Image 1 (cartoon, protein in one colour):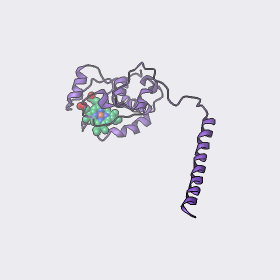
Image 2 (image 1 turned 30 degrees about the horizontal axis):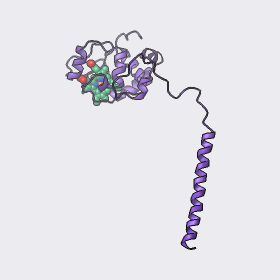
Image 3 (image 1 turned 90 degrees about the vertical axis):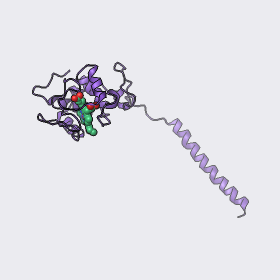
Image 4 (image 1 turned 60 degrees about the vertical axis):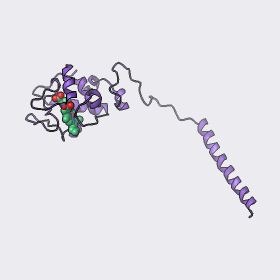
Amino acid sequence: MDANEVNKVAGAVLGMLTLAMGIGFFSGALVSPKPMKKAGYELPDNSGAATGGAAPAAAEAAEPIAKRLASADLAKGESAAKKCVSCHQFSKDGKNGQGPALYGILNKAKAAVAGFNYSAGMKDAAGKGGKWDYESLDKFLTNPKGYVPGTSMGFAGVPRPDERANIIFYLRSLAETPAALP
Ligand code: HEC
């Protein structure tokens, strides 16, 4: 085979490949995938503004916490809350560690656990008022640094809305008489 023939063969092979690819593209365009019954993502109803820029996308499509709590699972919440125990204690006689003790945190004022040295950011949030109700816990746990800028809670957040609801449902149970559900 001289160089010319080699070129011809190479050309033929390339031509075949191009044709095969072309057919692939063309048939791909003809046979389009079946439309899904339900869209892959739901547009948020936009009533609750999305929290801080870095919040995971899933957070925006979340149903309101009141709705998610209705189907929350205490056991799953307790197990998901293992993420917190390196810094927080949950028992009634729990001590402050890297984070404040969290028994009875639901409906407690922000930055109000005795003896804990809060960050300026958290004190600031407390200064603006409000307590840890279901909504604020949901927002804080979605993206701690987005909700409380300057917080010293070194935790990325819980992106899954249902998992957050389970954790908050568990936090609610840490009280003599758990607060009413929203
Ligand atoms: C790496 C350690 C760490 C982890 C993990 C962590 N936290 Fe925290 N958390 C902190 C610190 C530190 C603070 C105090 C923040 C401040 O002062 O800005 C805090 C504050 C809080 C507060 C506010 C308490 C108050 O008295 O105002 C809540 C609520 C809370 N954490 C819940 C959780 C939950 C629920 C989890 C698990 C899903 C979790 N945290 C995981 C360290 C952590």
